[in-house]
Length: 393
Ligand code: MG
Ligand code: MG
Image 1 (cartoon, rainbow, N blue to C red):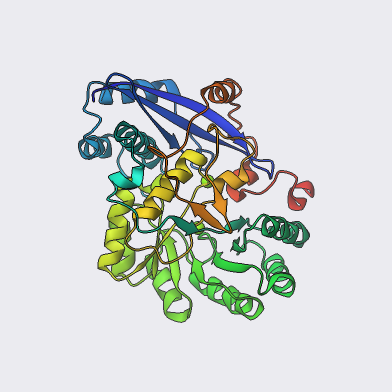
Image 2 (cartoon, rainbow, N blue to C red):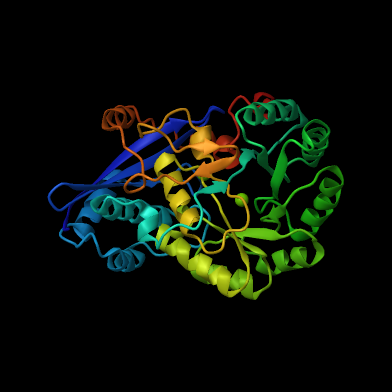
């Protein structure tokens, strides 16, 4: 099954909150008529540079054309050399490798008429519990809108949220206190996510207040980026499990060896696809640590890949974050991934289990407005452009 062509399709999809995110859809063609689809998810993060899409496409064709599409291991091994780990949260290398890894899995599984989880060894579960995000609040004026959002998502079956905290403690306390009054017993909090905003002492002090106001399963990113020692200090003083995003396999080992985490936040977008993610899950198993699957807000293709990973994961003991398709107002597939009662359902069709709507894809590509750099606060906070704190400026 020789790869004959790689095509990249840039798309921009608005979120319900207003901000638009950029993604690159990957199409691989191989053999007589085999096709595989993948996704480089959510490029609209700092560091602030974008791909030259045509140049990247030319490079990937150079690297992959004529190769045996069945040898995913060999292609991955080569791509790791050309697109090495960058060691930060929004690695372009990881996204390129994710796009190809997903498309290769889709291609091979489709050729076999089997779901991708078959290629990963089979499935242990057919759904994963997931949470809906409440993004960072910069002012108390954002609290009522976010409480309304919890109510709306609960009506759609989502009874689990994660809350990004640490930007404005007054707003956090107002939200968490009112959340408990209004939703206790009906909606749970998966995590309080400091997203590396505070040093570990400030995070401890903030957490002491938050834990008086609400119940939650775990705490994420409670020290600055790469401050593994600080995260270890935090973990020693916190009774709840600690998770952190894993940047690459050696980083996973560093976090575990330092006693800095209980849970590895494993994300295909960061690590470079499904194969790399499975290696991290094995690492967690070896350390008797836990795993959750994180997100950058993938479209349906990227989220379906996560569902197949969840299906095959030997260790997966906390809910995941993968509700991207619930945030976006448009997608490139005919039918998006399914959710039932706060669970992401593992697709059972061939490949990733989704059909790309090529007419819609062409329309979205033609109208892809690369809004990158036009709303910097939005890029950093993932909050709506009409948020009250933005209007005050
Ligand atoms: Mg996080
Ligand atoms: Mg993102």
